[in-house]
Amino acid sequence: MSRWADAFAALSEATDTRDTVRHLGGQALKVSQSVDSVIAPMPVVRADTAVMPPAADRAHSICGDAEGERAAIVEYDGNVPRAWAEGFARLDPDRPPRDMPPKRWPLFVNDVGLFLDGPFCSLATTFGWGPYDLFGCDRDRPFTRIDQAGLLWLLGGDKLVALSEGAAGIETRIDGQRLTYRRRPAEPGRVLAWELMQ
Image (cartoon, rainbow, N blue to C red; front, top):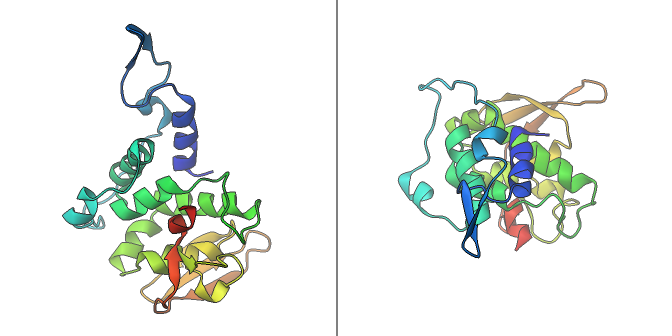
């Protein structure tokens, strides 16, 4: 699992993730686990490779309280564009969209978490990969319409090993074979993975 998936699971089990004290009926209860205790240290990112999203993207939030908190953790701890962090926070591994096999959906959510947690996320922003290039899919048939699928839909647990402006290298987990995904222009009718959750 990705570091973010582990952190979100731990956050959802804690009684409160924003405050160290929760008030119920005038009585304060101590929280057994804080946000800092469930997040592993982030590796150092060189300043010359970091890409910050525009201020407008950071300021606008469409998430609820819990989703917004998870998005903030991913955005600031992982140097991830805010819109991507918010989208990832909305993905529920237990609620696959229609047309998505129940066992394949959690794998996709984990692939997204690993991508956001890894070095290819900042490279993708540097090379101009947009959200549809990575997370885009067909609105009605996100799993079966692979011609509409963004890069992360095609990983299926395989490993992203290379990224350039126009292509990505994928290494299969079964036999280590190298595959190439060619980036193509976004087509009308595509949506982002987290828009399927509405």
